[in-house]
Image (cartoon, rainbow, N blue to C red):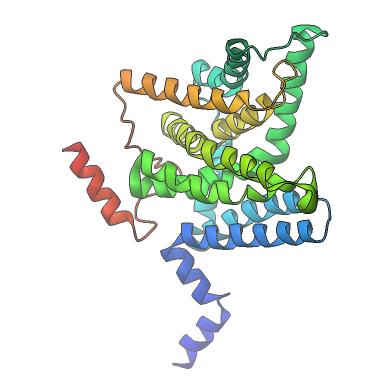
Length: 301
């Protein structure tokens, strides 16, 4: 008896580890979203710059994903998760998708809506600006974010519920954690409720499309977190293209791209609702797994 008690006492946070093992996605979302929203709300209420909160968000997301992965499966599972960042062999077509589809469609939306503006510095300067910003965003933000969202959360939800439902479930906490950004530019006191609602509508409306696109990319690349991170960086960068002022065209471009990719996958005979990423996570990671797997089996039948 004394030996078992002493062994349990040596384990860090045994109850937390047990909960994380049973419900890893729930544990991650409660901890990560809760901590980030609390910290960023406190900064906004204090009238401080939100940048430290955004940096803390990256640390919390990436750190929690690694910690919970280590608790669940030890070093081998951590290596498996981080291996998604090194998965770069996914074909020229998908490289073009993650790097060029978003800016090309954003420009196309600008042309179609009459909001395109010719750059006085020429396309060379526009292209260079886009590539520089994309690399900076990828290295400083999206790689760390998507290790958590795509690699830890979405891969598990897709293993439990399939491509469509798993992606839509991921969109909820993904959108929620970004809501404080509505007050980033003007602060809590100087941001009108109308502006906040517009920003929230954009985040909530675009999240399902982006997460579904990311989910399909995970399936088609065999679990490349790198591909999703580059797509995320390309999406953010496309919103700041100088030739399409206004900052809304890239949201419509995301919807168009999601539809086009879904149509392509359907033409190739790939399911639009089923799909998992065994390279990152195995099914059964949440209590929802049984019903999700049963639903996939009924759909396949």
